[in-house]
Image (cartoon, rainbow, N blue to C red; front, side):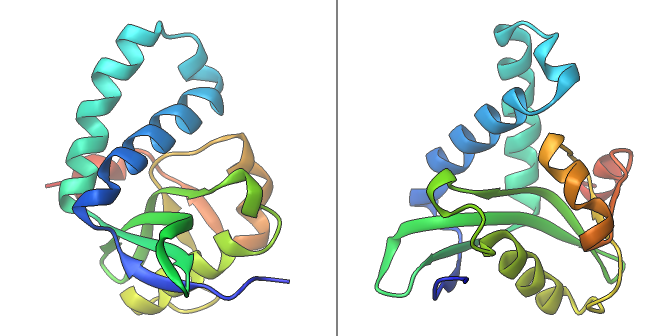
Length: 149
């Protein structure tokens, strides 16, 4: 059962959390990133993630009673009416409760995407592989440059 959540846009105070969770989870959950040294990965991916955060929207799912009690987030763009997800994260404690799905559905609602429409992913992970068919996800990393123009 999904706990009650409140949605809010990311604030400046969330920036370090967004950087640390993205960088750590992306590095640990991809085969190709494991082949990179930490210095090469982190130095370069910080730049990419910073550009994404500057151009995209980030929606936070938090406790209805406490904006600082973050359950997860989704960072996304509207790509010609299609939801384009750059990263989507749920804290370990709150996984398997549907937080990720409610974040995805709320982002779809915001961009005006159809419920059954596919969603583009510009970054992927082992976890997303299992969700692709169920949630109509398509990994298209080449769109990242276009989205960030």
